[in-house]
Length: 171
Figure 1 (cartoon, rainbow, N blue to C red):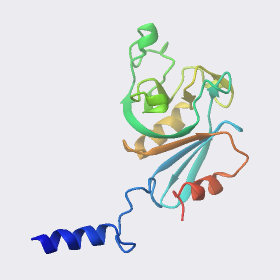
Figure 2 (cartoon, rainbow, N blue to C red):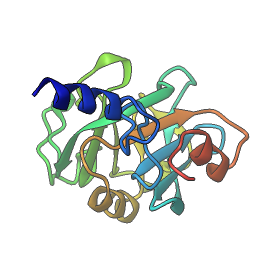
Figure 3 (tube, one colour):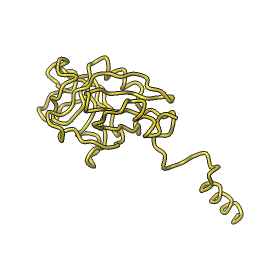
Figure 4 (cartoon, rainbow, N blue to C red):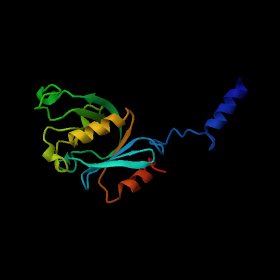
């Protein structure tokens, strides 16, 4: 039995071990990039940029946190706690979908990618920190993003292809 444990330990830390636990995302994994420089969101999957859509971000640069985060929560017709507006209500500013991530040590219920009841604001600097998408774009993204997906929020002059490669989502 000791031999098995030694062999397992040697293979896990060997360059031949197929799983690198520190590589997240791994090439081919779903990955979201939000670039505040041009207010666009890219969805990467299967080693390529699948689509790019306009996104609304914070009114000021510091409102939408930058960094590499993890999707923690997903919700259909999310409830808007701040103003006690139920999901599905046309007054709800979160729209039909919520993809929450753990920015600033939160649990996925404070910062998120979501729809909006004001589609004319998408592509502009208007939010209190979240990332707004048009209804059809957030619904398409929602279907393809599992909990645990990484999301990079940045301000960059680099292309989404370059950012995807640098963050190991594209080979």
